Image 1 (cartoon, rainbow, N blue to C red):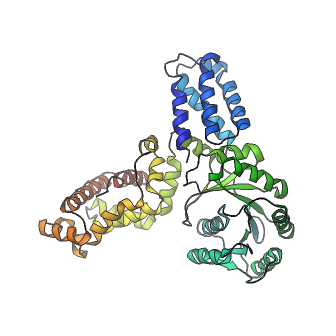
Image 2: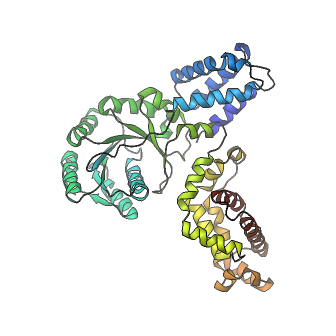
Image 3: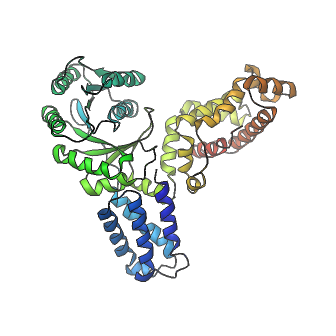
Length: 446
């Protein structure tokens, strides 16, 4: 996401390189290029123009005129305005109520059902809530079955009424069940259409009136750009929703929806979602997204993702083994699995300042570890626990068993020793270990 915008803004800032100060003359060309970059990212012309006017007003202030590094100052000003444009700070969802009722709305294909399961998973595992999902999409083929499959994967209850075509009735009965069985939250997955129509709006309006939800979330496919913004406006006119969810951020999206939607409907983006896995849902932090757009990385989110995968007891056990030089291939394999759970490797690497641009044209994903995993799995239990015994003949057998070459096995064993040494040197450094370790493991492609 934002790759083209990142490149264009980087070129725009270079126009000020070597200038002694920011003036109305030398800033004009930079702002023209920034406005063009925003429009190409599918930001509406009106929003792009307003954004550039605000940047210009801030850049021509007296304090900025005294700056000896106008390029750097311009980056800061654009960063601050981008953050404000997207909402300034993260917005939490309202979970008041007994139970709290979350109504999920949006067009067909926007990712409502998948998002509902992701949100249920987040509320259950991160907030300790007892969650029930409600299948109120009675039109889309296999919608109910999809919700059941997703719910089973996260061990969450789903309320359905097979054959019933009245969403309001289903939702009201689900609410009664949730109250009697003392659920904390119910998430109502509503029906969508291929386009906004009167029948759809009437139905979603009736659901809102009947349930009086604690929170209404509008789910939008971020790949649809300005169409997403217009759809959000139409829904907001009827629902007056509380927040927006941007889905499919792992697709070929230019980012216009993320940059425009707050300015158009004046409602915060609350979550961003990528991929189909239930753990790929993140709270939307405008400042962190602004960091990414300007190539500054997003180390805070990276650290949070790493912390989610760290078991404190396991970390203490591993630390003891490192100090005693007992780190083996079983531990090594386990660390790889934890890193893979954090998400797509290329996306994680892009959160490190300066790394995202360098990896733009590099093909890196979680399948990169397959060769490494195959080699480790071809070792005997004794070899995994005692890597020092892996001699020439054992390496030949491991290579044959894993479908790799002797050179690849030798390289992995060398990388294992380097990682073991590195981790021992930084043992006790907490989360910094994990980031350093991740960067080391990104190189391990046989």
